[in-house]
Amino acid sequence: MASENKVKMGVISGASLALKLKAENPTSPDSEILQQISYDMDDLLEKIDKSI
Image 1 (cartoon, rainbow, N blue to C red):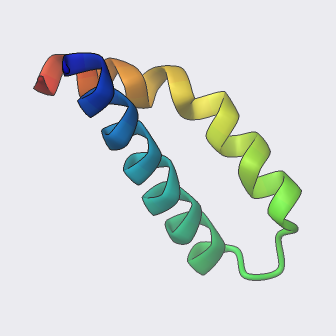
Image 2 (image 1 turned 90 degrees about the vertical axis):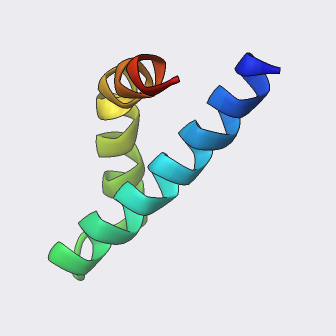
C-alpha cells in the first residue's frame, strides 16, 4: 500500500512540477520539461519518502 501511495504522489508531484516549469518557461518544448522532471525525479522521490 505504501508503494502505491508513493507512485500516486510521484505522479502528482511530477505533473505539478511540469505545470510550474511550463508556466515559468512557456516557450520551452515539452521534451525539455520532461527531461528536467526526469532529472529531478530522485529528489522528488526522496522528499516523498521523508513525508510518508
